[in-house]
Amino acid sequence: MQHQKAESPAAFTPYQILITVLITVLQFTIVLDFMVLAPLGDILMKSLHISPSGFGIVVSCYAFSAGASGILAAGFADKYDRKKLLLFFYSGFILGTLFCALAGSYWTLLAARIVTGLFGGVIGAISLAIISDLFAINQRGRVMGYVQMAMAGSQILGIPIGLYLANRWGWHSSFLMIVGIAAVAAVVILYKMKPVTRHLTAQSDKNPFQHLLHTLSNKSYQTGFIAVAFLSVGGFMMMPFSSSYLVNNIGISQEQLPLVFLFTGISSIAIMPVIGQLSDRMDRFVLFCIGSALAIVMILIYTNIGPSSLLVVIVINMLMFMGIMSRVIPSMAMNTSIPDLQDRGAYMSITSSLQQMAGGIAAICAGLIVRQAHPAEPLEHYDTLGMVVSVLIVVCCFLIYRVSVMIKNKANVSVPPPLVAESH
Image (cartoon, one colour):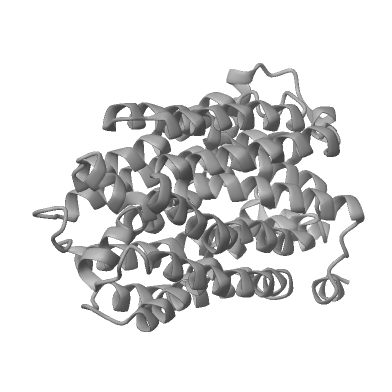
């Protein structure tokens, strides 16, 4: 019976399709808000006179504030209608992004990123909790595939348009574009999404602090916390300096940067639905390992090449992101299977916070590893960064293996009673 379900996953209802689209658009704005910093990095570092370590702090302050807000919100995440929580934090995210657009110095940009992180960091966790509530386990791989298309969509549409606006009207206009898209998305969510309250029927009388401690102390959840925290480390280490590396080390011009992100996004958006389908049909850990192997190979090539043609850079980036997405989708689908219904909001908030905090530390460490003598000079030690990221990917494989085993044991517990006794 289980084998048959794996081969023929349940189809989406019209409302599930609507929710998938809404969350994908919402994630598009969240991801774009973070990712646009990377291609704007070279412009920001030169226009606001920011050093590599200072820019690493700009990136990491978002992560740390997002992590702090996730922990603070975790105790309340399962106490309210998820739709209301989503709209509350999304509204704050929109205001924070508007402050980024109005920033005129390094310090005001830093403050604006902190505000944006306080609200934006919780949205991903709430979205994952909604997906877990509204979709069966054998549907979540496909949902993750579509939702992760937000990253590719931000590259195909958002980043090239953002760079075009930045080159034409200044980097402030890129953030104003995100504010406009997010405002429209918020209105659609307000009027089209139904309340998400099924989890409220399973709630205990624990106060928010007790609920947070209960979730943190669960040993099964702790395995997921550690594994998910490591997933974002590689991206946070490499992404902040990607545009500066492309411009100053590889020789890509500012005008060519949108093409790199455009074609990388196209490749990602083409592969993600396929990975999502595979994630619902095959062992997710095996798929994760295949993606990790491809990512390591391409990262080591990417961080060690010298001046190259635009075509070579595009091909390397396309293959590298295929590997990265083949890690993200199955691992996030596995992550939704760890918590129980009554703990999903808190669990997702904590994992999101740990992921952001780990990423913030990674961005700071990357800023300490990478050196640049002058804003127009090549970055130094970027190859070292590639080796560090590759080692972390291998470590992450071991952690995800533990998650995979735990999920399979959890699924087997509810089938034949004799196995329950044996497992204990």
